[in-house]
Image 1 (cartoon, rainbow, N blue to C red):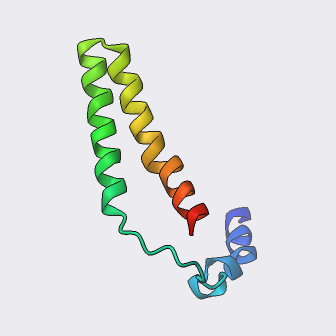
Image 2: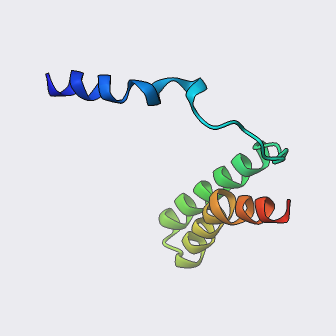
Length: 78
């Protein structure tokens, strides 16, 4: 019963048109980020298999760069 009441209370937030308008000029294709993210995961897995801490750290750095660092820098530069 509590879950149903919770969904009713949140029903205004579930409408996708109820959110803020997209007004940013961020026009960058996400496929470059996805490619770097996949390469980072592969480097991390290979580093764990080969027991190379440097390769694991490189994979983590690629994942961080693709998901946080580069998008934030692109948003700031626009």
